[in-house]
Image 1 (cartoon, rainbow, N blue to C red):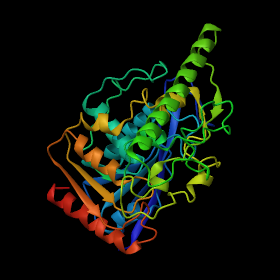
Image 2: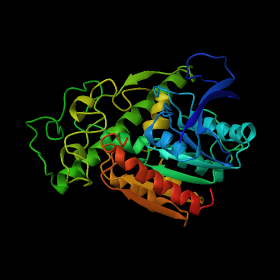
Image 3: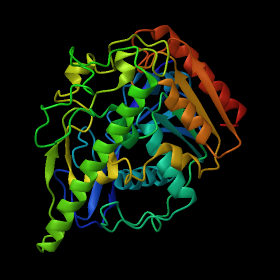
Length: 383
């Protein structure tokens, strides 16, 4: 089916004191969107995709949904392509403004959130706050009123190859062999799974995996403690609005990449969605490589981030469909299952797409299978 791509944008107010994106006047934010729809035919339902860093308007799943006859919009939050200073609560504001604009601009009556990959936890965070608005600040204590933002709940959520959250994923990928952030290349050999001399080799023992996971959480918490102390020091020095950027090395170290027995699936061993995990671990495109004090707390902190799919899913009531790609090299099966188990709504389903990878790049023939499953679910739910 032929589709039409319609780029557009809108401006909405932003009253926060701190600005984390380049360009534009203070007091407002520009949100860039792409509407993809069939050449003919109207719809009262729109599938709204978003992701904290955006950039997914050309993803296979997004385009296939439009070619199947659906009206699809991809919303790029203000941090499109750069999560260095990203604040998850502000992504929620941008998504909420997009939903309001969709209803006013195009007259859509029903909005289904398309939570692909990192968009899954954003969708759940959004729905949680739309159904139960409570937050009036960010984890760093900066004022940001989600409770008074008038967020309109979505009518349903699709969790498509989604992970639990950026904070949990970061922690599960964090290199626990780094014991001192000031000396990131002096590593504990017993925890460095990429060191050939590491005494712990796959298949890993349960004891080693437990120690490895505990050390990952401990490292995340050390960084969080350091961030909080730095913010407190800046405030004590009379600079409460000051920020500090920093680098986090070692963010692609996961026993799942080196031992296929961990979180078993159809994925090939020794690789991740960015390639060789040993190279990605310290490479420039690694998860959370460059960040800031406030962004760490909102986006990456295991304890402080409020965007936790498992927690948020436990507070929502809308219908939810979970799609798990069994050869996914990013969002492994346990993430899909944990999200499904956590969803509080009684109206929830999970579908397994066997041998499909994260982007459907190695098995393009399986994308229609996923689309058919989504379409069947949407029709049965009256969308």
